Image (tube, rainbow, N blue to C red; front, side, top):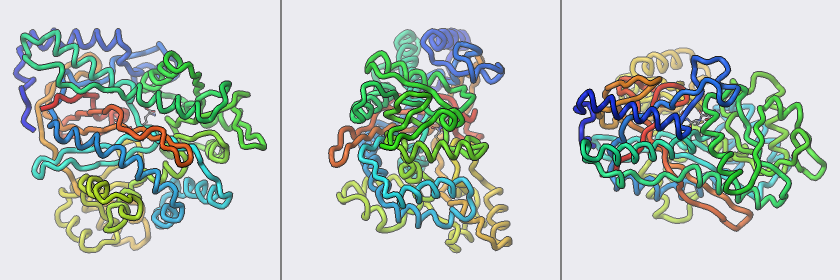
Length: 475
Ligand code: GSH
C-alpha cells in the first residue's frame, strides 16, 4: 500500500504540536501502560504510568483486505470450536511436539485428564485475535497466527482509533485526512459483552468473572478497561487473581463449582498462563488443572488453548484437513486463502530450500507472547544444527513462509519521544464466540488491533516491546 501521505513530510513545528496533543490525550483518556522504569508500575495501579507506545497517525490499509479480515473472523471462531471438540486430533497432532516441549506437554496432560474424565464444556467462550500481514508482492492477506489465549489490547486499541480520529479532526486543515476513514473499533465492548453474556449463561447472579493475571503486569490498564466496562455497563463484578493465588485460595466443590477466596467463579478469563514463565512451580500447574476440572466457563478452555498452537495452525494448513472441521466449501476457501506456506520440519524438500534461502522462511517454536521466532541466517544455522543432532528437537518448531509487507514511513511515539522511521504493520482482528450446547449466542468479529514496528526489527509484539499501537485509515 502506498501511503496516502508521508508523515515524514510534516513540518517540524506541526509535528511537535500533534505529538504534544497526542501525549496529552493519551494521559487524559487512559491510553496508558505501566512504565518499565518504575518498579511498582506493574503491581500498583496509578503508579508509574506512561502513555502507551503509539503511532502518531493511522496507517493506510486497503478496504477490501479489511473487509476480508472481518468476514473470515466468525469462520475462524467456528473452526477453533470444531477443532477443540476433536480431542484425538489435538493429541495426535501435538504428539511429537509433546516429546520435546515441556510446556506443551503439560498442557496436553491436562487435556488428556479431561478426556479421561469425559469432561464436557457445554458453554464455550472464545475471545480470539487473528493476526495478518499484507504481503506486498502477492497482495494477499496472510495469517501470522491465531491467538486463542490472552489476546492483548482489546481495551487500548479502541482508544488508539479514537486518538487518531481526534487528531485528524483537529488538524484537518493541515493534514487533509478524513477521520471517518478510520473504522470504529469496538473491541472492548465486544469482548465485555461476550464475557457478560457468558456470565449470564452460567446463571449465578452472585458469581464473579475471574481475570487470571501475572503477578506483575504493565499492561494492566488494558485489562482494567474490560473490567470497567463489565462493571459499569453490565453490572458484573470481576476479581483479579494470579495462578499462585488461585492455587492457594481455590476450592472445587463436589458439584464442580469453583470458589476462589470464597467467591463463586462463573467465568475464568486468562490474561496469564500462556507462557512457561507463568508456571514457575507445580503450584501454578495445580491451579490450571483445578480450574479446568471446574464447571466455570474457561476463556480459553484447555482445548481452545491447544487449538491456537502453531503446530495446529500448521496441521490445519495441510490438504483436506480444514474440510474435516468446516462444512461449508466457501468457508474452507476463505480460510485457506489466508494461509501462508506452513511446514513441519520433517519435510526434507522444504528444509533443503530453507537452508539455501533462509531469508524466505521464519522458524517458529511453540511459544506465545512474542520475541521467540528465528530469522535469516539463524534459520539456516538452526536447521543445520537440528539435522546433525538427529534427535527429535525439530518437532518443537514449525517453518512458515516469510511474509514481506510494504514498508511505509511512520512517526512513532514512545516515552514522550517522537521517532521517524520506516515501518511495517500487522493487523489483528478480534473475534468473539459464545455458545451453549447447540445454541450459538455470539459469533462475530469485534474490533481490531493494528501494530506498527520499525521495519528493521523482525519481532512484532507491543507487550514484548517491539511495536507500537496503531489504527487503520481505509483506502
Ligand atoms: N499479559 C499481557 C496481557 O494480558 O496483556 C500480555 C499477553 C500477551 O502477550 N498476549 C499475546 C498478544 O496478544 C497473545 S498470547 N500480544 C500482542 C502484543 O503484545 O503486541
